[in-house]
Image 1 (cartoon, rainbow, N blue to C red):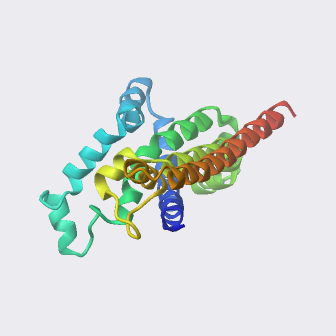
Image 2: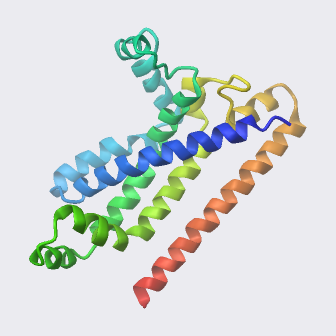
Length: 222
């Protein structure tokens, strides 16, 4: 059994989670401080990938990074190609998983006690110090849960990924695309094995999220 789809899926999910962690937290932090109207508009824009069909997201990514598109042509001139490459899957997974971390982190930031920031400022602490040493630790349970959910979403992504990078054994194959290809060719046995692998990973992720939520509730009631 070729384990490349598992390795590739984990690689794509891990890298996209790192990208989503920094971009999602930055967007959530600034969105939480905006007026209600602007926040609402930004929410619509940033969470669209969550409600759009994944194939539509993949189509937009092809319009952006396709080899006949201005950005795609410019990137290929410097040796970067996102279409039909495994790292294009990182882009697709990041776009689809971003809203999960963004909304979770934004909720955590909005629930944060602002008096802690004011206390830190009266002590002469910098905003950077307050963010990383006060705000982030206080919101860590929600943020970690968002990262785990984003990782799980990226791991199981099919629609946008298949549109952008397709299916090439040993190069771009992921668990999801492999299951579809095996089913399409009538290899139900190996397709079912990959389904079991995906189920095991998904169950572990959900258990992790449940444990984090339970711990967060215990901290609040302590």
